[in-house]
Image (cartoon, rainbow over all chains, first blue to last red; front, side, top):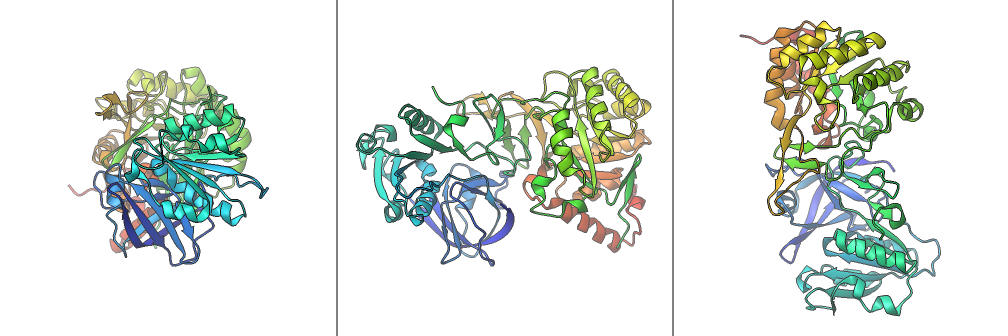
Length: 259
Length: 303
């Protein structure tokens, strides 16, 4: 897929709880095709301690308004500065980057989309695309507390929604891999993005239950286009591959994660 | 329109703006963002005779105005390069230069011999300054004896333009530059990354898997300009300057300090079109100063 460098205008910056914001961006031109699982590299100009672009997964693409949505968690100076953007500001983006989740050809499939923390972001766009393809996804979102659960109404538009929180403040108490829906429904494939321990637990659950599983990795990156070789992950064959170009989405059978 | 063309050894560059090894892949990674053939040259990823997996993740730590890396020369080896990558890049209309590395004199020589077979690779950059490998790399580049030995051995088997990439992690870079000039290097490029370190204070652990790594980006620029200026006074061979170049103004600093050509490195990650901006900016600068050829400006500091 051809990659673009685009100046995009902030149309809205919606704060979501304390630690997150939802940025909506538009461009003069029609946005290029973007696939679920792909990401963008955002240039951060107003933070003296931030040098590199920030890789952010695609949260949603609204074709009607020609808008790209980015869900940003304030982790450091770069993401905090991004969350200070105001409507009308221009952000420079490289997009679309990386590979994408595999969309099943068979409409009768029952996919489970598991997201944790800010890793729920790409699950929304994946769910929307699955829904558009005539497949009803099931979302299982995990968070520390109710306050870390984001965009729940939006998820409900595209599929069935289940939630766990570590403190039991919303949904079932515990981790995503303990949720009762896993016992009740036989899923055909699992897609997941979130903290690495969660993804590893999901990957091992999927492997043991014989369910196909794709994970989206968040390794720290410099270039985002396969030039610097900083964001590598080890494959089963002990090779280092770039998450930015060979991923961010990997079939778990390719990685060295399984017990 | 000023004349921007310059020469490095037998190499003719359409302009002095090139991209640094390890920051520009094999060029094609950037082709969606710019016309890469406008560059004076592209230094491709560091290549060794045997494939290397590089160091363990994490390999990168951002710093203010720069970054540390500890990639450790991950590459698929010179044979893979010759068979699979070279055919993809050989017709790009600019100088495609291979950065050659090794862990011993023999492996440097073997790699240079393999690359010498490739007709459309007009030059190599001999990397005696990688700080991220346990054997070879910088070990050769920090003593005059080590630098001389490897350059002498490679010179015997490599007839085309040989550029030697120097380490800034030395007491006096001009001594190393003189030593490699004496062994027949056609040019020196400087600087490679500076050895640095970053700590995750919450975890009380080094961020990089290798503890130390190479610092690059705008934060190293003044050191690089100083070293180019010192080296310019010490050797007769042309100098390729690099270290933190982001804009045409940065590039001009290096040229005025004595660089015949420059490389853009880490900044390619921030602006993948930086090379084009620098070429256009140099052109405007020359026109504005009534300079017909950029060669008039090499080392042209007023004292």
